[in-house]
Length: 287
Image 1 (cartoon, rainbow, N blue to C red):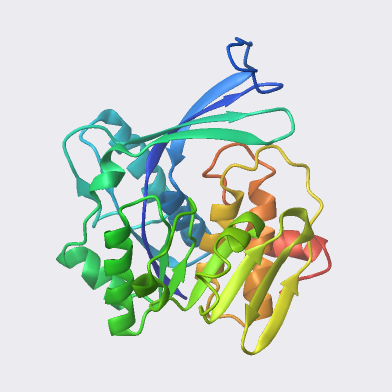
Image 2 (tube, rainbow, N blue to C red; image 1 turned 90 degrees about the horizontal axis):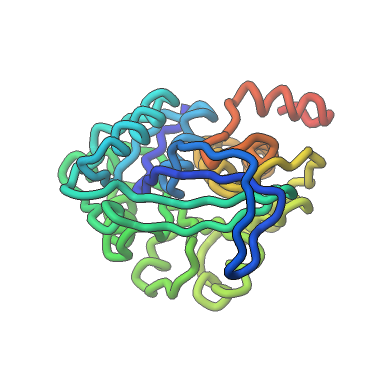
């Protein structure tokens, strides 16, 4: 079993579903509202654990009731949250609006996520893991420090550079792979050109992994889209969890996890490894 540590963000998500997005200044009636765990880091940790990896999450929450809600969700998914830092103030918050086609608009308030730090417990978790998975919703110096710690111990370093921002050369040099969508790939093309492996998600067209050994691809899957929130995070977490598999197999399973996530509401809807097995069998692609 692969061991994964995720250093990143965790939020309380408030998800509002509506038939269509309002125009500026317009008030419309929504269909439903729900509350749950979000944040790219936490979503990816949940996905990795659901996919079967031993998973540790490193992040920060506030001293409010929301902290118990979001950490409880991760714990229930099998994620070790013992290194999570508690800070005074608010846990991160995201306001997610989903329309009738499954597309979304998201407003994020970082709050405690801006205070993520690496202590001895966090460094020990990184050193002991097979794979470190990172994103860019926490302070960039912490991301770089985590990558440096992983590289020194031989832990594989994966970065999902989202939300897009300039990536310092020091961080790029520490990466084994990046996970990007088409827009991120275009925006960061020059910065990530030297990264050994680039995994690109292509929406309904599937996914592609490019490395010096060549290119492998996963087909797209036709599914009934309910909510695309978190589908990319499910892909990243499943990819990390399956990193010990051959490249074509791990990208296929990650792509299936992302597709299945889009069929359910909420950012934390990542499927289990058994769900992925059943889905691939239905597609005639059992692995």
